View 1 (cartoon, rainbow, N blue to C red):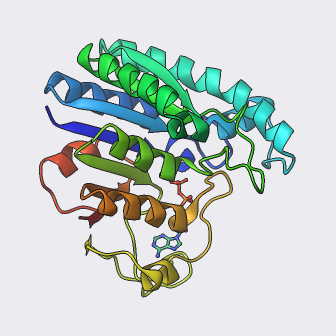
View 2 (cartoon, rainbow, N blue to C red):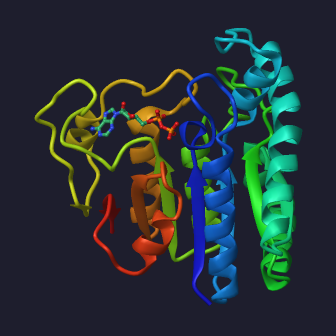
Length: 257
Ligand code: ADP
């Protein structure tokens, strides 16, 4: 079976005011359930916990203190999973939650346990929904307990489970030769075969208030995928049913291969 990892960013899941974009979530759930019905194996890596937590508490800005962010993640994660559970249930699709930290994937025993869990969920036609375990992962200088962002987490998951394709949905149509939010003449790059220092220079500035990674972390993720000889597509998640078009071979977004 074709194995696909789909990563969605906060900007796809929430409105700029932090409220959940239920229409986008519904479309995402509809699309992924459809893929499972086509006998594909699907993993969803979903950001959004902190953004959802912000929205629930009516806060406008992401707090700078890490413990506050972790509290928001704890609040937002359950809300997010509740919504996924409800929307996926409409399409008869079962889900399972996998929260990961870096050390889990670094130690052979815990890594093997997690990979076994993935295999069993996929065998049961369940969609694993993965997020970084933000309530325990802390970004410290010398202990790299945090993946840093779900872009790279999605690439680590995709390569670890030997997925054929990583579909990364963002708030932009793909990777451009310069930041299209700053330069009106920026051009979409359709295919990227190699990622080097020059590529990273094209990624400037972070995106939205609630999105975290910006293009740099997406390129780092893409590099992991290329190093593993797999493929990644970066596309606009505004309309998550774009997944069907991508898998039908329509030239959309940026293909890293
Ligand atoms: P998400 O929340 O979906 O993970 P981010 O906001 O973190 O998305 O990252 C996407 C943003 O990266 C774009 O909206 C854009 O502002 C910014 N960006 C910077 N450089 C580029 C580039 N070369 N091509 C496309 N987007 C870029």
